[in-house]
Image (cartoon, rainbow, N blue to C red; front, side, top):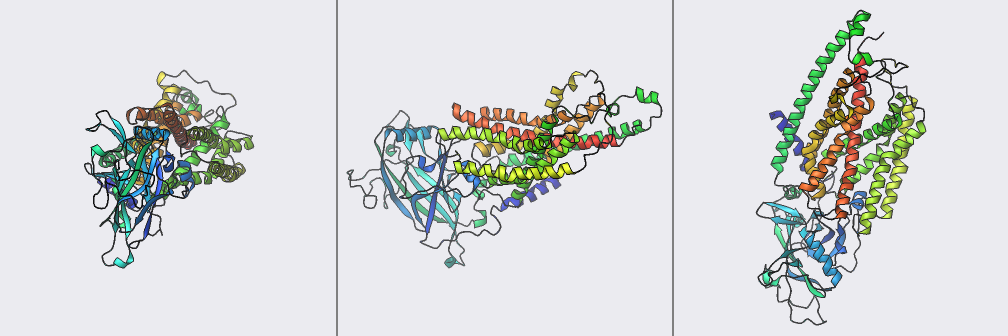
Length: 633
């Protein structure tokens, strides 16, 4: 356990850097302009997110959304400029941003956003805005659009808007290099709701000259329930203002993301739960491997020592089905395509984890993880074509063109159909996550221009190679399968086979789901890589054990069952998502619910193919080894 804890700490230490090699920090001189970018508006109560200017906030004269990579476009994580003006180390007090008279539909939008607990997201020098929780000692990304409360004057709860923000920017400056400038290491906001008052409410309101009575340079903004800004009636006048406060900090630039990493108070529970899971699964794997090796060695020795025909006829077990164990399964085309696509997904996941471990994917790179997954998936097309073709050729398949085309199109096609349905849905409701036509065109080019040709290349080399050799010949007439007991029923064994692989990832899955649906940062890629290794080992071992017991009962139909036994963990993942939806999320409404389960269906299908292919190829290796170790006349 001590060595395991030390190893985990080493892996976690590798996560301390969150920036690409060669990227240097931005250095600002005193008085230099610092650009505050508007990002998006999100909620944990619904997957629907919106661009910042989908809400009737103050706009600059020119605003244009910009997405830096494909992942940002797909996730609706674009940025645009804002009217807030900040200058390095220059404090400001109660600067008027704009005055707006909101119409009925705009007030209704504000009320809906407040009811759905939407939060506003900004960026400053690539740092997300945060609100500090002094009681719990961590920060939450984004600040609320507003709140519902009763005040001393209004006993009935009303909607109030945060129309004033105190922007707190922390900077690091080396005392020995004051002329070298400063680096931004913190970005927080303290929101206020203030119904501003000023001397003249005529049309000559000017933000440069109008002096507010509620806050100014000599009277800073304060929390006053009697002066909250309501958003209940139409034609509501709202004056938007902001403060800027610069604070010197001792936090170095390389550790400026640490405060966001402390956003989950259960980090200690997370660490020890992962350690516990790894130790339990490793122990079970060792026990299973030891029993399997001892039992198999005894079986092989006894089979090879049989001398007479009578002894062979009296014997029962897995050797008796040697003439049928490599008989092609039903629907060999579909099984080979699923197995090949699963290997493509596995290769993508392994490469992504390695990139994350070396710091090439980080929270500082918005959309980087999704972009990496997409590009690595299309680049791994040759793995899918090669593995699918090799398996299909083992099944004596002749329609290699159909096999290759299905491998290139089946899994991406299923994901594409679900994604297009989701995209149409969110576009109808005006969400920023709706991918534009150009992004869909780029995805189509990646699919048919990169992934599909690579699948054909892999398939070509696979069909040119010799067929995978089998240690025993297949009989022309299939052997009769004896009646099976209830616990060897395919449905029961398949359902049982997925429990342990799912159990290996269920704890880590909780934190991944929190990152997906509760907008938390996920950064422990070291733990995730360890869990991936455990998942692969567990899928392989549990499927081999299930296959061994099946063959011992003289049932040689192991091809599909090996895939489905490990793949059934995808079903458990979807069931887990249902539990998470009911117990952990506050999502309400038909549209958010449909979106949630559509996304989780995509994840579950991917997990099904990933784990299924691991179990299939592990069983193929196992069956070839054990039947190659016995003497068959």
